[in-house]
Length: 99
Picture 1 (cartoon, rainbow, N blue to C red):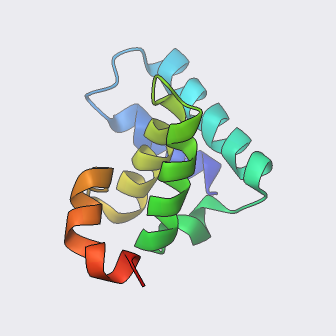
Picture 2 (picture 1 turned 180 degrees about the horizontal axis):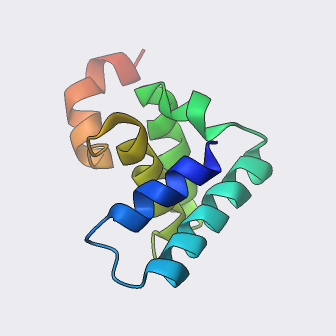
Picture 3 (picture 1 turned 135 degrees about the vertical axis):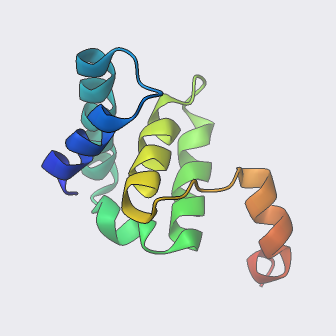
């Protein structure tokens, strides 16, 4: 994960009002996700199916969605677009997911 650029990206987001606290929280969560699953977020978000699977796994133990949010923000940082909701992704890729 490119921590410095990700942090800079988050600081520039107008939707984040508490810059220091929110930015540090998202960066910290992204780091924890990498350590927990022994992955590199750069590699995971480069594949939409891998991103989908990671978000599904995180959903099972993330009631408030904060870990998912960190991954979604990282995806937005990397590609300049939001990752679709899990339901929308499933609808568009149902045939591929059932194989």
